[in-house]
Image 1: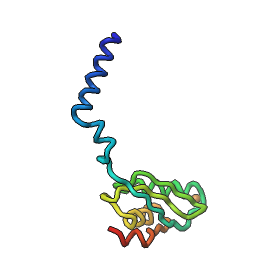
Image 2: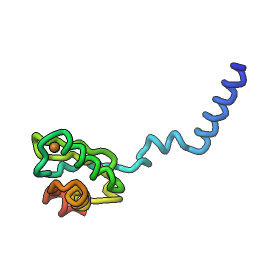
Image 3: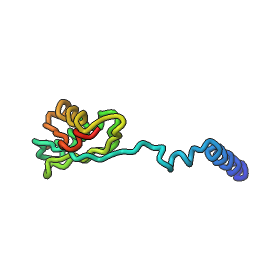
Image 4: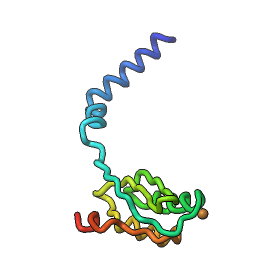
Length: 110
Ligand SMILES: [Cu+2]
């Protein structure tokens, strides 16, 4: 039984190594993400933060969101190949009702 299990494990490892799967996962094949801090006005509590985070996570390319009602910001981790800070801010404004703005420096970059 245990011999059989380790044999299966060895086969899986060999397959992963031969397809380059393990190497690809570690050497830059995964999408490079960027973090942008959006200005979000009107949040007053954790419920507001949750609404902003929920809205931002619906954007394709957004991988993480951390809203802070005290500072009036949302830190968004996103894939620049799929979306832009301006597009994320627009969706947050429309879906959550809180006005979100991308920093002007980020909108100038491609
Ligand atoms: Cu609230």
